[in-house]
Amino acid sequence: MSFTFVYPVLISFAISALLGPVVIPYLKRLKVGQTTRDDGPQSHLKKNGTPTMGGIMILLAVVITSLIYMKDYPKILPILFLTLGFGIIGFIDDYIKVVLKRSLGLRAWQKMAMQIVVTGLFAYYLLTFHPEMLLMKIPFMSGKLLDLGFLAIPAVFVVVVGTVNGTNFTDGLDGLASSVTVMVATFFSVVAIGTESGIEPITCAVVGALLGFLLFNVHPASVFMGDTGSLALGGFVAGTAYMLQMPIFIIIVGAIYLIEVLSVMLQVSYFKLTKGKRIFKMAPIHHHFELCGWSETRVVAVFSIVTALLCLVALKAM
Image (cartoon, rainbow, N blue to C red; front, side, top):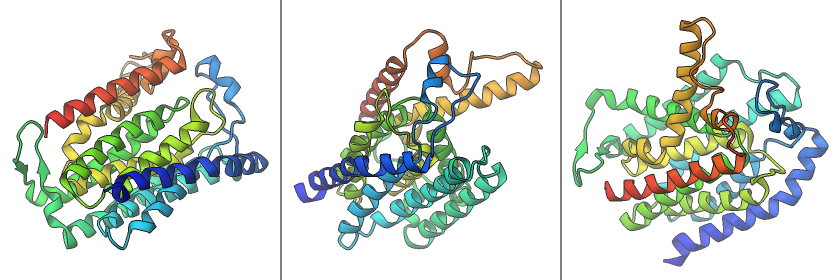
């Protein structure tokens, strides 16, 4: 049993931790530094120049560990595809922004088009090889499955793209996306192990990779994951949820992702409707709490604790 879930955590953690002293200095030499928003919290200005694209460390750790187990655990493949696919989109966006020095990165339509293509391939895989995975477990109704029929495929696009972008918005403070997602990955690992789903090596690999990355990403961060990491983690969460028939559970365990993206949508909509007024001091909502006087570490701690408690609720809801 330890080979299935203990070793993937340890292997992935070791790879991620060992990559830090190699990758971070290399990123510094490339001068792929983060540029913070001028209208953001003043405490963030000192982050200017901190290397980004550190998500490469997470991706490499997860990919290498998953390949070790791929032969005996083929259900890893679609999750790895979605994780790597979105990670590559994030890498291209980061590369354009910080290496080619084009501040906007990929255009919005280009990023969305690439996300739709990756999601479409994932949906095709489910429909062709695992159509049963399109059925969704209903929280607090043990044994009940929701069959959306012809709406199941459109739902895949909504869930995957929504989760990916929610995770992306969550990556705005030192260790925030990493800390929240390690809780979510641990939840999925517990479920995967308990149900013997055959995907536990990759869920555990993500736990290990994030723990290793957090050694360098906690406040004050010496590296940021960038879109390379945040988009990849969103792909992992969505892909894992589908392979466990648990996309509805993302609303519970991934509530922070949902709140983050909703705060941006509400802020932008209200700003346009009222011609300049705001609901929050700043969006995404983690910046609102900072401007209310919360320290960066307090926001990360509270969001992580909330996620941990919601994961326990989700376990009870199975």
